[in-house]
Image 1: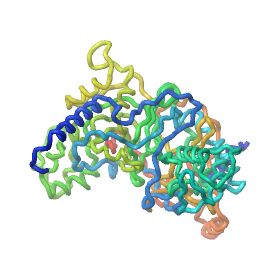
Image 2 (image 1 turned 90 degrees about the vertical axis):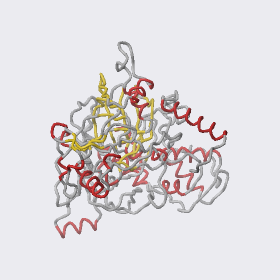
Image 3 (image 1 turned 135 degrees about the vertical axis):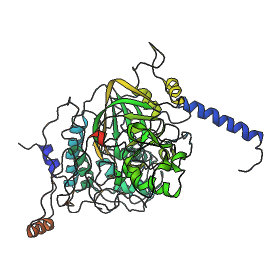
Image 4 (image 1 turned 90 degrees about the horizontal axis):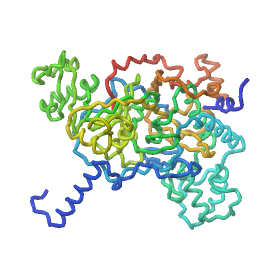
Length: 563
């Protein structure tokens, strides 16, 4: 028998001058500050540790804002979905470009300090119920769109305020008994901040372009985001334990969860739309200090060989060595760079500050060969829009995350020692690779939740940055959420790891199907080619009319590391 929640899913569609003494003192102070940062003192930067809060406080205050107009619009027209691909040897991994020796930035983009996790055992059903609630809003006519150029400062009045109030009452940000007026008064400002927090916007209370764009996303689109996100959780085998790690790709954040509470939340950089971070379920097995980076064949062919033809000293400057059979080092001058023979060798970048993986890699064996890691280029962490990697997840303050993962792991100084900030920094200072195996593996999952609900009954939304919520056959009169994804061939998004036993039973829910418009049905009847599209519960696949079948995924050993 089809449940009510099933029906919800079925609706889814230098100057050389000596500086003054004051300047010298300033530089000395900055050096001391950098040392504090290096030793894990995060008081100068954003402290990733969560303050003690009651679970009943408002959830997820992630402030990853929408991009500027030229990159992302919450009311942008539907564009071809850029499916989240499985990064492979052909095009996944960072090009070894010249990098400066950057110190960690003193500030990173702000993220929530709320302890409610994005993903918990209750998320699936909570999101289904919220999708049902939003469907009722759709059936009732949704909400009124505001003028796209509306700007209202706190305390100011506008004829659009009554419509704004009704919207915020409908979605639960404003109590229904609040007095009606055309002024952006204190209660309404608080409601606007609540709305902004739920949508990953800066909590300013100001009505401006970004907030209006989010307000104007139709109720049908929001319902579809919730239903699509719930559908992607069907069949999940993720083992929620006492400690686990969640990466929500659309939020570009990493959460360390301990006994149901987020104890640390980190800014992250995730995959570009055409090099999308895949969804996975895996276990963290090791923390690698001073990792090396083995270049994929695609990078050797597309980047290294052309560079070596122009600049024979390139590999030496980048500390990339060529290894032949048995790991014997090969002189670059012994290779004919006019050919592609270099691709037959192993090219490996040595450990160090300029290594493309930075100083820390967090290993989690999976078929997609993705992982979390440090980076020598930390400026991206200060951005609100952080979709720049080639598939892996770069983590701000990753040494602190490594320290949390290593809690309970025997330290390097004999019996009774543990891993702390000083031990981690001391080991990194040796510049020697060290692989630390966790005595108890920690579950980790990369999820793609553009809409989700928390136990307090609040709905949260993020942009469908990869364009995979939109059905292959667009539903009539339903706008898409914003996407910076350029037109591209549809590719397989991901295949989750299958080596994890399920510990949480999920109810059987019908797979979501996409309803066609009458015009689409008529066209399908004439051509006989178009068929109803059924969203896959575990993996996102190419459109049904794609003549190229999904590519099989080689074993992890056959895939090089990616970034």
